[in-house]
Length: 363
Image 1 (cartoon, helix red, strand yellow):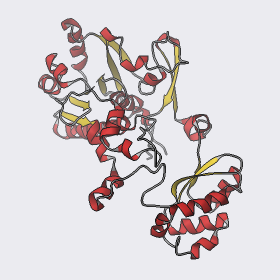
Image 2: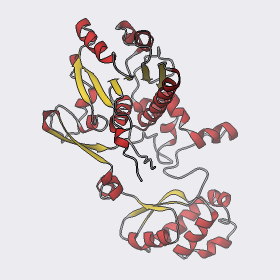
Image 3: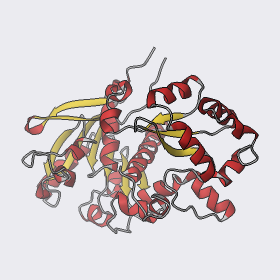
Image 4: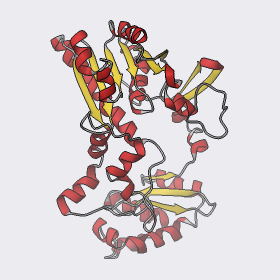
């Protein structure tokens, strides 16, 4: 039986002094699981800067953008000028019964108005203060959005076509990864408080989050000195993996063949069984070395099938493959539809976004 996850954090109060994406995504995570989340926005600037990050075809008069809506579901909102002592006192009154604070204030600003972790823990000793910044040292206050960290942490250098320029990923991936790191830290801090009765400070940086996510590419360099180069969607260690092929109806598919059994099945599906006895393709190492020739052979075979024909073959024979979908096609999928959260918000805006929760607990 699936547990009702929407009440896990019922009774938990979270105050969010965070803007843009990473911090607000953490606040939304707790809201989805039943916490009472209050987002305090800067009254003097009109609130979270992403309220104005609109596509050209969005309503310029709307108080929010689709971007802002993506990570601000289920929250209460309070606009305060924290430089004003009376309004700052109003914020402190909200913190009196708070369990968690999420902040991405610059350290110097937070300290100047005594909303930094040290000041708040001294005043509220059971509070969990969760801080997210761009860099490891909270006092390193260089401004840095997601794209800056994609560049600094090596992601952009690796991403793009072989002879092209570095390319950033089209989602704020570093922000999203950092949000996961911060929520994990908060969950540990809640467990620590349950055992000790004491609050704590959790700090997460976009830089560390990005570096921790380099995984195999980091190990490739650390263990062999290999500096990953741009190679499109191809995989440096496996072939055919990440390669894209066109069907006869113009649709595109991606292959992610990771084992010898899967390669054998692929060859049988495409009528390429002769490849199995070729020294050029007999194991993964040889396939990586002869990737270009292999891709030409697979591309020719795939082009003789329609999308439906080739995907039916791959699914039936357990070959890892996928149709490359655009956003419209993604949201025709029942799983995607099920994850949409809708909400009527200020100004009569009917907002939609994806759930930040992608796990299911059963009892």
